[in-house]
Each structure stands twice: as C-alpha cells, then as structure tokens.
Figure 1: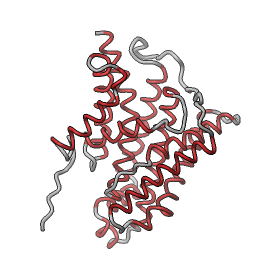
Figure 2: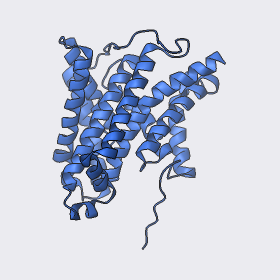
Figure 3: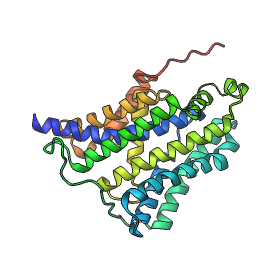
Figure 4: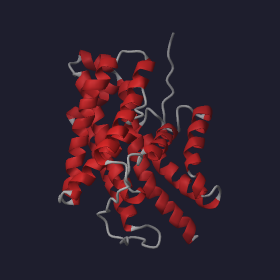
Amino acid sequence: MDGFLLQIFSGLATGSIYAAVGLALVMIYQSTHHINFAQGEMATFSTFIAWSLIENGMSYWSAFFLTVGIAFVGGLVVQRVFIRPVEKAPVLNNVIVFVGLLVIFNAMSGWIFDHTVKAFESPFPTTSAVFPQFISGHQLGSLGVTLAVLLVVYLFFRYTPIGLAMRAAAQNPESASLVGIRVSWMLALGWGLASAIGSVAGMMMAPVMFLDPNLMAGILLYGFAAALLGGIDNPWGAVIGGFIVGALENILGAYVIGSDLKLTVALVLIVGTLTLKPNGLFGRKVVTRV
C-alpha cells in the first residue's frame, strides 16, 4: 500500500505539470482551433532563460518571475508576428507555421545555450514537510506552484474585465468584436498567458529531468493527452486530465508496463480518447447546422 500511495502522490505532482501544459494548449486551441506544436519548445527556451539568469547571480525566485514575464511578452510577440498573418489562412498553413516555430525554438535553444545537459537546481528542500514518505520536497513544491498558477488563471478569467473579454473573444469573436472588444489583441494576450504558463511548467520539470533543448518534447505529449482526455475546449477539464494522466502513468509504469514504456500511456490515451470519446470527459459536443 505504501508503494501504491507513493506512485499516486508522485503522479499527482507530475500531473500538475501536465495540467499546466494542457491548459496552455487549450488556451491556444480556443483562440485558433489549432494545436500549438511549439508549446513545449517555447517552454524549454524560457527555462533556459531562467537557468541563464540564475547562473549570472540572480536568485531563483527573481529569475522565476522575470522569466514568466519574458515568456508572456515572447508569446504575445509570436502571435503578432507569426500567427496573426495566417489567422484566416487554410489549416495546413497554420500547421506549417506551428511546426516551423517548434524547429526554430529548438534550434535557438541549442545554438544559444548549447546542447549539453545542464543541472537546474530546485528551490525546494529535499524532504517534504507533508507526507515525506510519499512525496519529495520538490514534488510538493512544484504541485503547490502549479496549483497557485492555475488558481491565479481562474481568478483572472473569472473576475477581471480583461479576462472576461478574452473569454468572449475566444468563444465568439464575431459577437465580441461587435461590442467593441479588440479580438486580435485578446488573442495575443491569450498566447502570452499560455507561454507564461508553459514557462512555469518547464521550470518545475527541469530539476527532475535536467535541462537540454529537448526537455519538454515528451512533456508536450503528456500535456496533449491531458487536454484531449479532459476536453480540448475545456480549460479546467484539461487540468483534471493532467492529474489523471500523471497518476495513470505512474501506476501503470510501476505495476503493469514498466518505466521504459511509460510514454506509451500518453499515446494510448490520445488514440483511445480520439477513437472512443473525441470530446473528452468534460468537452462540449458541438453540432453544426448545415
């Protein structure tokens, strides 16, 4: 039982990071109806920025918040420069742009920061103050940070005028435009927020997996599985999906398939969800009248 609880707690901690990545993917999908394949590479590049700031003498949390701000501005710039010109272009054009951004950010990470594996120190103590036999200090800390970020995002979208305007622009851009909302800028802010959330996920994952240009390649797959399982059009469904994916990954990896095949859990969930329940557990079924 202790081993089982260890896998559950550890899975929930990792699942919180998958939840953050899934939420970032859903935010982009709601505004563009496309999956941002470069989300993981953008998060990796932001994590390299944080590592560089810390290496140059900045404290961890100062570097953390500065990196989140840089990632927000970077996401906004990416939308205005690369995504806005193809907003109304065919789907294939958008996919090519996303794949191009993935390659660009991956190459920039290796070019600027080189391809050697780097240690990224955790700001949390080694031993957890709560259930130390089941969860480490970093796992508990990363769970707390990602939950705090998700709470801030919820409060932002629920209670602030800009958050409400962004929700309106994502759900019904035509009506939002008619009431005076600048839809294009709201979408840009959504990209900025998604990039900032992704950077948090990267900084929480780097101490566990070490930092290299391919840090978030596999994590993006888990985030995609979380978004699909919870509902690609439901932000909070994606969050719940992240915790489910994290727990399933650990349990199946420990007791069924082994740790070497844990990535297949995400692939099976993606294929199974698309085949059996395309709208996810909490997604809305959209009926189009022809």
